[in-house]
Length: 190
Image (spheres, rainbow, N blue to C red):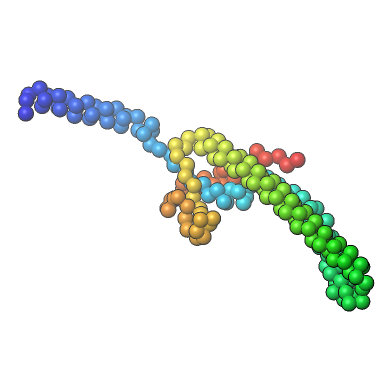
């Protein structure tokens, strides 16, 4: 090995030690603050979510009322048909059959339309709520000088009882309550 190579290797090692010594002097900059958040707990405890889902249930119930009335009418007409079809004239029987078929078609269309409307509204609601939750996590993380925030909790949609991406964390890292309080503190019901 040549002397120049040995010297440059020694210089590189000395440079590394001096850089690590500088980094040691700046210990707070190299320490990381890590937090974990259980998104399901935050979602479930978010008052806005509770209020908006109550509103969505009210809309669903109001959309369901005419569908239920149509269903009752179909049931009543079928009962009338079943009980009296042998005594009915052919024209009256045919008209009642057509009425039942028409109402069944109308029922299916109304039910599908209402279901699609509620599904669309729920999807938008979920998207909007999770955008707010993620923003709150960023705000709490920035206010608390967190460097990394991980998701914790069960990933029930994939496999019930199975943890999400984080297999273990100390409870001291849990910032779920801080995020929930931050969200609920910002929320002003209408």
